[in-house]
Length: 151
Image (cartoon, rainbow, N blue to C red; front, top):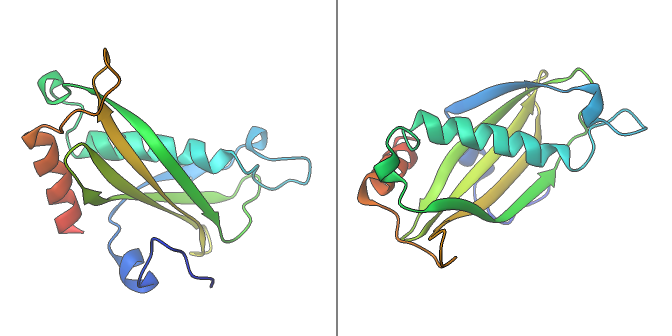
């Protein structure tokens, strides 16, 4: 497998994932050749990211959410093709928690236990009025860091 710039040791990185959601590839997500369109993994990332953030309690208390989370960058590495009706487990984990942002990593594994997709993205909290970065609340940082440290 080719080297992916945000993964130092692929086996260790893969073993750190614990949270995933199942996804069934829909016909509308494929192109005229029957394989998953290149934009569809970003939808899978979003769906998995939201469920992951809910699982660590980030949407439980509105006082935790002083700002709004936005995706600052998002990257996908396509390792194997996916096709209509394939099953995909979309794994998500926090990889780094900073002052105003955090990194999320993704891994898509098909029904044959093959890693088909990897990805990463930076989520930044901003003030909705000014658009400027806003410090993550201590509870948010603790929840993400504990999820990261338990991986």
